Length: 128
Image (cartoon, rainbow, N blue to C red):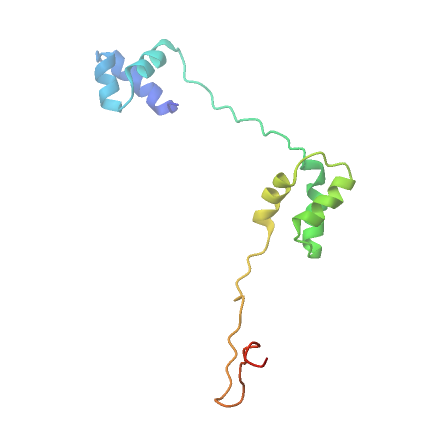
């Protein structure tokens, strides 16, 4: 899609006597695009795309409230909203919840060291 500035630039170049190929080469556009825009009398207006509604929209306030309470399990929330009449799949719920989940920055394991001779590890097969 061309910007308004390019539209007026194309019109100006054409009025100065440049042909379609020269305009296309100087702007890095295809000749068919230049030809199409030269046929128009004015540039196209920007039209914001309409946001589609989701089947999850009626349940989003409930999901956010439950996540603020500390429930981050999608399966549990899926069962709860399914009981309220949610007709969709769990995939949509998971994709909605993903950016709202807190990022865990702690390590999964913690190293615990003791002085030599204070602790030992024994394999269970040896004791038989």
